[in-house]
Length: 243
Image (cartoon, one colour):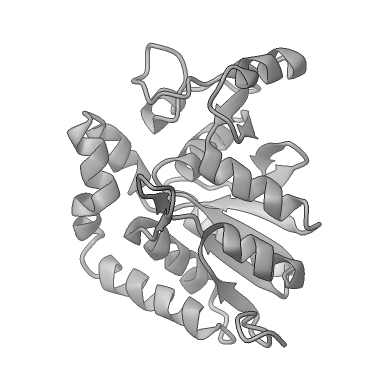
């Protein structure tokens, strides 16, 4: 057993790409948690009956990929509804049933595909689909929860509280006793913020960034708890309703 593997625990938690590279092969499923805003966009779309095709690059190749698979392509720049789809949850909330949408997002998309390539089941989790995600993972024995985090300007990972709290909420709903210390700590964070109705999260760094850019409504959507009833599972190249 490697010292970092959290082996022997049913529910494990580790951050970002390193979690996939070092822990995923010893898991049965992984939950990618990117609250602001990839996982929230995926949940909103799947709840409406749409399919989300994650895409790791924010460049012209996304449009080429969309043409290839016959799907619309979200703008790589966050924009409000009425100007097409983007990584803004507000722009996705009224997506049509049956729509196919390519969603460029280097963080959530990259981790989704890296986890998929290890051969395990992959889910996208957030506050909105917290209970649905926990329930969908119930059939798996070894579960890896991966809060994505954000990025500093130099490209290094910035652990972010909203992903950590959502990860802890998903673990808490699972109700499993055999959780690693890392997973237990996330549950404690969730319970602390839950007692305050998540109000402090409206002032976290990621929320402040979106609010300063004029996307306060996105923050509200991202911080709604259990508003969705469907889990989001990755089937090959797209997310759709999970079991």
